[in-house]
Image (cartoon, rainbow, N blue to C red; front, side):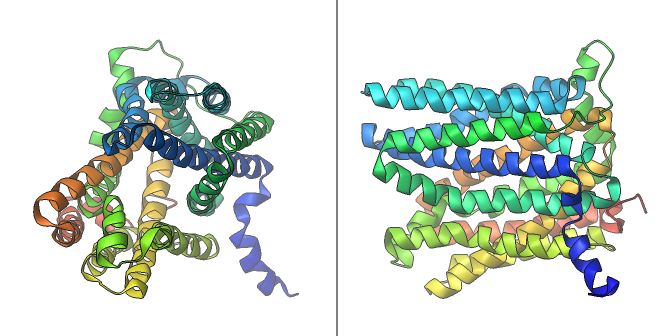
Length: 413
């Protein structure tokens, strides 16, 4: 094979040439896979116990609340202490939570209270895990391979979120204990992979924590308009454009597909995202990154609109795959910009804020969609969100000219 033929393959898997990143990738995949199993199992178990949809809404809120309440702490901890250690200890705590759910199930449950208590602790572990893991990637690969690492990191998340819920449902169908036991084993394996990562170089926070240092992540995002534009663009585009919460309505009442069809609808965005992530791993964006970001956020809105108005199953699934593909491009550009343009000493705090924004956009986006659907109908709710996402892309392109003019992801040119 000629060097010219070998080059694309070497470029596609550039991040995996670095053993620390391979260990990190495996740990992220296993941890996300296990989290998806837990999410599905908990939802089924709680609904079996209470038959109250309101309790299902509490599951997401309880897990998201610690990220919001601890945002000033989790980022500072990631910057002050070793991110690898924070990841490892957080994963170990998640393992204990999965084991606790297993023990509770084995002893029998009469109400959701104990599960909610474990989920609150699980949410605390994830609140610390998130900023540390997002910040660690930049410490594991050289800058020239970072964009490739972002693409593969996103593919691990997407693959786990496609396969994980299916595995969770199958395991729960065998026995709830099988689901929780498998999740605990997977997170434990993830923990071992994390601690196997060699200690990376990291610019740790040396000064004593003060109010200023705790808020420095917010301050940096506000000062750096490139980062502010990227973070807020995701917040408002997903807040308005998210249609995930209404997929059961489409599967049952509009497309008349039933439960199996709901599974297809839920999997479609991830499938589109994985295809694009693999493409980006071998064909990184080298120019006009800002314009590409805004264009694909607008395209996310367009595909959302197609899904909203479609009454044909094949078109709906294709639109959701396109939606996931467009979102993958925007995630790739946004995450690369945020990580590379943020000083290492601030990455934990900036990522903590970013993850609260991402979590808020998902949670509030589903709430927005549900409220509008109950008042005006599902189609109107999704159509409104689609128009809103396209409008956000246009307004943000005007309001953040520095982000729009950004060309390269590996430097400020």
